[in-house]
Image (cartoon, rainbow, N blue to C red; front, side, top):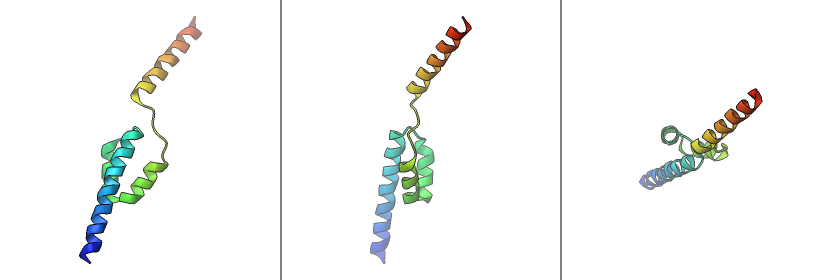
Length: 76
């Protein structure tokens, strides 16, 4: 019975680490995914694996600059 507990704990830790790495890679909130992973380890991992990555801050800033540029050109 103790071996099952140890194996379960190891799987839980592996899922936690995988969620941290995947959340970072997909520009998601690491803190939120750690909390979800604590309670729903492998389920959180599956959901995070399915989600599309969010744009990085640099991509968002670039898009804002492009939109502002288009608005400025449109107003001229």
